[in-house]
Amino acid sequence: MGPSICGKCYEVGDDVYREVVDKFPNAASITPKGTLSLDLAGALKELLSGYGVEVVRAQSCTVEDRSLFSYRRDGITGRFAGIISL
Ligand SMILES: [Zn+2]
Image (tube, rainbow, N blue to C red; front, side):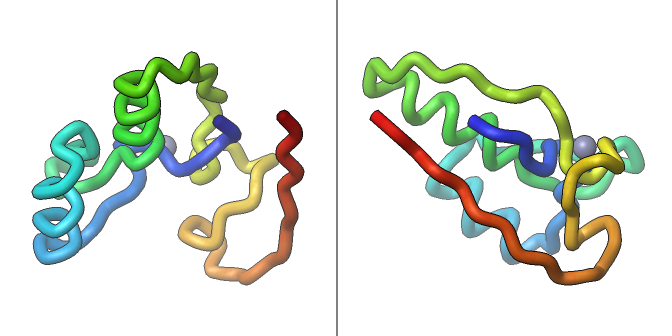
């Protein structure tokens, strides 16, 4: 799994938090200031691992690592592409 926003940085409102966590309890997280957040990559890793998929996750957070694109951090849109090969 490539870099993504981490559970400490992906602050969401109560409505989004409840909708996601009801379906994916492992997504529950909290920011350093104590507000609700989601760890989507962590939840996806747990889900895939449950199917026997070996997951290697990049530890970089796109908000914290300024060398990575983050709309949430910068508020500027961008474009990127990913290529997957099996
Ligand atoms: Zn982060």
